[in-house]
Amino acid sequence: MAENELPTVITAIADPSTEGFVASGLFAQGWSVVFRALDADSLQKYLNQHVEEAKAALLIYSPELVGVSPDFIHAHSKHVRQVIGFSRKLTEESEFEGLYEVPQDVTELVSLVRGFLRAPLIRQSSPLHSSTRRAQVIAIGSAGSNTGCTSVAINVAMELSVLEKSTLLIDANFRAPSIAVLLSLRNLLSDEGWRNVAPSLAISEITQERADGIEEMMARAVNSFDQIIIDLGSISGLSNRLTDQRWTSKMTTWACDNADELIIVARADVLGVHRLDQVIPLLEKTSMRAKLGFLLNMKTQGKKGESEEARFLSTITPLRPRSMRVLPKDVRALVACEEAKATLIEVNERSSLRKAIAKIASELTQ
Image (cartoon, rainbow, N blue to C red; front, top):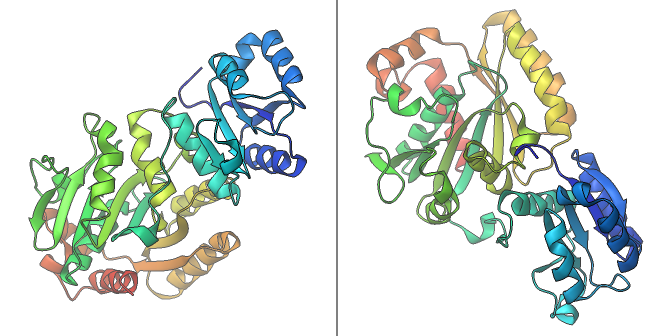
């Protein structure tokens, strides 16, 4: 089975409402429910008759199902890809290992299931909720290519540091990591996982060698910084990336499960609108803990710009995003940054683009 292929699902849940919630919730995210067991006997019969199909399947069960016991689950777990148990009475089912409370909603359900699929045989810890951590985490993704996603991430992080917020900027664009090049930096990877490059600003880059330590690094980072900005690059193929186990997807998955907000950056031109139109259906069917935000980049001045913004707002409004932001087109300022290998505030702090990004940073601290 391909690493990025969505698994099939077998349910063995006694309560009809819980089973319906699990089956319909996962089906809406692209999973196929291939069998719904009514008791332990029917489950065992299915596993015996569909050996190859079962090997690729995720078994979701409840201890209340007739005939199910800890020994039964242990004996049959080797015949499926992974096993997850849900119960509304955890204290009464203590003999079953690794049980979870029935998720509150589809987002929690999908997040938990993704965790098991990314790390088979390892019980996943709960996501790092914002109420138990120091940092606010903002992930920034691109709806297509050349949207300015990385420039936005760099300059938002810099503005946050200027506001005296200790900030970590993470380059997680595995296709084209650019932050180190754009800022003329070397040796970003230290033993801590990041390098301090300016007062209140540190930068990290996710590489294949460091990918296995993402969970540990982020656990430390969210308690070490006030703000974390993650440059994800393109979010194409988001649904599949949230369930595969390759290193290229680990930071994206962490961000969708743990970030306070995922901001999607889109260009204002015709191609940018087309790419955003392609991304919207993908986001509509992808549940995540991170709240969605959108940013229209490179807006033209005058009436044309007003038309671009109106079209942008009409496209994203059905998703009810947490935020809708707009940045002006300022090629001169960006070229100056590239040539100087510096940020907007260092090159031209009075530019319209710098002021707009400074406003975004200020809003994030409120």
